[in-house]
Image 1 (cartoon, helix red, strand yellow):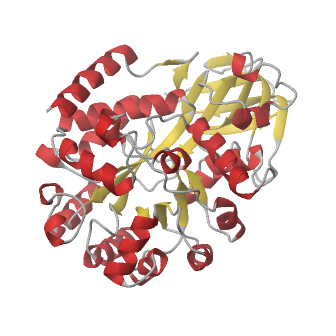
Image 2 (cartoon, helix red, strand yellow; image 1 turned 120 degrees about the horizontal axis):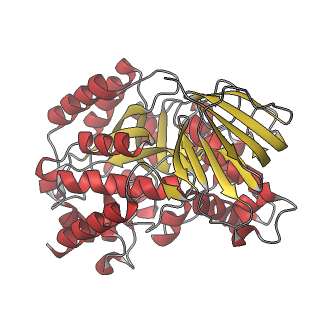
Length: 451
């Protein structure tokens, strides 16, 4: 039976609709998985199944995470990798990750998703690019379905190991025909292109320093034959750029162009060191960027020129990146850091709070190739993040609660609604027992790191 939900007395609703309306004292009517009505004078229907009184609460579109490596939540704050840049950090962690099991993939996926949901994130991508000990992307997908999060599952891959000049150990690489065959299987088994889909599959070779040019080209052909999105890492730091120049004789952006990895169906993670020509190429082709500010700071990769990208027409979304290069997954924290970093680099007016929130909602939707999430309007998916304005983080900021979401955070969500289902209720996860999940996750993390 289709359920209906009515949200009344919302202090303010941040719609992110075409008019960027901010509705004071409004209400939202949800039927099934979509919004059917929204407005300031909306009357409560007689036959609604559930009512939430959101007096003193701010409502915004569910936040969107465009880049993550959820398995890395098992290796947060590993001591030997705490003070390394990207390549050194990877060298420390690759051998540890080689011991990951299918159970670890599933549990770490749920742990990462629980953290995201509790911060108001409703849609996430995850880039799983190593599959030791029988692990499969299916393990992540199973975890996502159980916890109830909208999921873009990216089938990553590494095929060029140390013996061929790549970065990862050979033991973590796969044969390229096997990668393409499994990616095809996953698309045909799981990908749902329908509006308000809860599960989509993404073709996602890991990076230019872990796969061959041939695999990148073949992966692009495969993705476009099925009409699915494509994702990889690009220009994350100067070592990344130098590798591209030395091995391929091209900048990362030109290399991506040569391989067919530009277009509105493609998004790249980081792009911290994307040059002006690269920004122009991305803007002209509609190629998206997942901006991961905390990870870029943690690994000292630099500050991505997000303002320049947006002015050039590049779709930009927010990503928390891997939990071992960020060590946290609060999506509002990333929104705030994105805003502050642009100000550090370009001045105090470089990015407003509302622009940062737009990147975390509408921007993420565009990067993922979706027009059914990221805004609150009739016909859109019923994905909402709701925050209690009586929490201490908002004390003294009620005169502009919308800006306070970015300036005063991070805060936890009071309610998170995904596909019309209340997944976080009064700050508590409803779909899984969180203490049990955390205990299991900690046990598995200890097994993994201690060998």
